[in-house]
Length: 261
Image 1 (tube, rainbow, N blue to C red):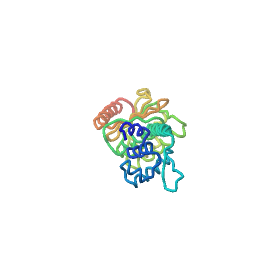
Image 2 (cartoon, rainbow, N blue to C red):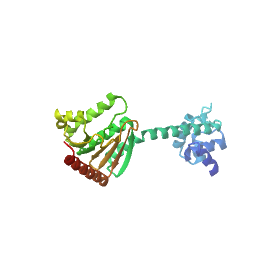
Image 3 (tube, rainbow, N blue to C red):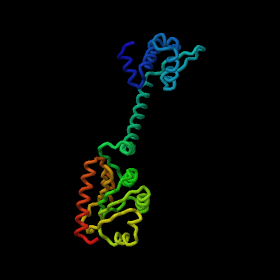
Image 4 (cartoon, rainbow, N blue to C red):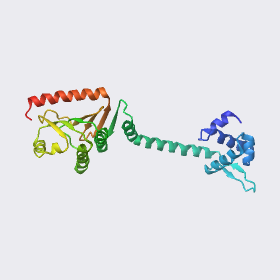
């Protein structure tokens, strides 16, 4: 058996042992598994399994002899097999790419290593809120006046309501810098902030208008972009989280001293 022939046959996706049996059949015609073993150097049991597998792949077929023997089918079937396997690899690669956000979420969920991940759409925003709940650390929030949810209004309100309801259950307090508007004032008056452990500092409604909210919790900072952009970037870094907490604190002190609360 020439090595270059074995290597060529293996290009179809066969392993070393399968390629040896295939080449043995090509060079010797009809063979029983026992003869395959003798020529290829593989064990007889392994040759029975190899023959069965290659028959399933339509590379060989049984003869009409009473004794179990096999012969090759047209070698062009190797090309067909290679093409099928190429398509499987491409399909698997595409599925892996589509599922990579989920794998990255799981990685960062259980491995608190410095890094960043970006999530798209409404699901990405929802994941940021869920991540804060899992962290169970107080949240320091800079809210934008432009926090308009993507998707239907019902979808956005549903998971945001669920998030807020769970905050007091897991013991999370939120320290929020929020735009001053009648709805926010109303929430304070009816005691809604107190119900969900929300400690609010008002700032002028036009002080921060970029459509990106900032959530700081534990060793993480989540930048949540609303509207048409609809994406979330979560940075895991103790120093960056501490820097953002200090900035949040300076802004809070400023507005508590210089803007009516």
